[in-house]
Amino acid sequence: ELAKLPPEITKNLYVSNVRHIFEKIKIEMGYSFKEISRRLGLLHKPKWFTLGIIPLSLFVQFLQTFQLEEVVFDGVKIGVRGSPYKLPAIFKLTPPFMRLLGYFVAEGNYTGNYNLALTNEDEEILKDMRNSITECLDTFITESRIQGKSTQLIFGGKLIYLLFRFVLRIPEGAKEKRLPDIVFNVDRRLLKEFLSAYLTGDGTICKKKNKKEVWVRFITLSEFLKSQLCYLLSMNGIRITIQHPEYMRTLPDGRRAKVSDWRINVYGQRNLSRLRELAVFIDNRQQIIDNFLKENLRSRDKTWELERIKEIKETEPSHPFVYDIMLEGSGEWQQHTFFAGDGILIHNCCNWLISHDGLPEIFGDKYEPEEIVRIAEENNCKIISHTYTEPTVYYEFAYEVARLAHKKGMLNTFVTNGYMNLNPLKKIAKYLDAATVDFKASDDPEFLIKYSSVPSNEPVFEFLKGLKKHKIHVEITNLIVPKIGENLKQFRKLVEWIIENLGAETPFHVLRFHPDYKLTDIPVTPVETLEKFIEEAKKLGLKYVYIGNVPGHEYENTYCPNCGEVLIERTGFWVNKVNLDKDRCRKCGEKIHIVV
Image (cartoon, rainbow, N blue to C red; front, side, top):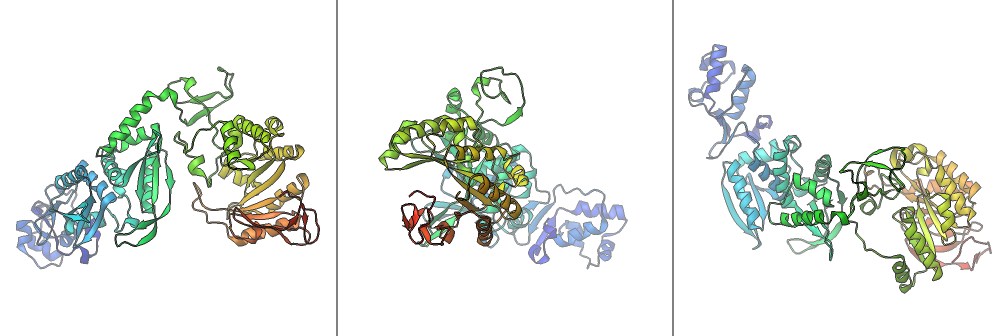
């Protein structure tokens, strides 16, 4: 690998203990050492052959020219002229080296003069770093204090710098860091050494305040490393969530600046158990994880967790449950409960951190329906909206909240995917005042199957008719996705259905897509595209059309369909001005289908 680098980088590198290789060339080719030099066009230097020491670039030239069937590199060393330190030509991947590599990817940097540095505050971790260096590398170690707190271990030299920087291809700079390719090709024992050191350096333990939940978080500034680590964890059956926050931070020079990082979270007893098989904190933080897992194991009968579905099939009910589901495990069906998520698998779900976490440590607090209504009343709320999680998932709870809220004079709304059956709709209709039904890509069948796992939206249209029948206020949102979900013909078809079945007065929101969850490779929807769809909807006859997810756009406002006057001026979630005389336009007197 070193020989592939430009000559100016490998200058002064040499190999030693190669006399046996020269002897092999001499015997197999039948040439004298002098003839070998001549055939390579080199000035003959007998000491190369007698001492077995030669510049690296020339040694590679020898091997390429004479093509030996088998070369034994045992004992061959690579060194730098003027340095006492050497590396074996065949560098074995040992547990100490993989651990050192993990520390360097997490905590290391290149310092100049071909040196490397590791920085940490914890003496236990520093001791392990020192041991890792001395056990696998022939090098020096010097130490210095950073800002009176952390200790920096300096080691390396040119040869080790070239090994890390060019052979293992670990870039300079925290934002450019990446996992070495060898990490994806080592056995599990060596992988655990690497990831344990990396976790110890770039990982942290998080606790929910006043709760017993514990989770592990990896933190990195490198987007590429984030993707590699996510792949590595997922490949080993560990479910994760990813966050990319921006925040203000005080820099070493005292300035405040906006920074961002990538946070990979591992939640839940099952995932933390799997992580423990793959990586552990080398310091005493691991005891926190072990205690959590031990405690969680004791109270398992009091907890729940999600299972991957292995098989769903029609069968005669063997137990008095709604679903018969084949789950991997001990067969103790009493411990399993089927959970439908938010009802639809949305690839671009913008709330995926709370809706697709797939784990029991969901942030939130437990409330009874009576408490929800009481809190709403105390805060002078006029409407309770059931959103983010599909309301039909917790239908009984939502029903009771809606019933109690009506008694207190509050209104109830659902934000829903529209897959509620007509019987539960009929039951809750007297307490449900409004519903917003979400469409993706204008109900494009190909998009729904590929990106939402929905075979048909026909139940949604039946649900919408049911809302109309029960005189529940309906609004429609429609997400326009660039490239894969902006079919204008399908959009017209949806708008025409709305006008025919729900009425031209139905509020219609065209939403801007932004990359999230599993659709991060699609760009945000251009505003011009949204405006094109809005104009098309108006042309077809819809009277109240809006653009969503574009704060400050003029189509956040409500306009009079007759004279075009601004009736309600909005910015984001805020109403700036209302220009109505009860339910009529103040300018032309047009009756407006709106209640303020």
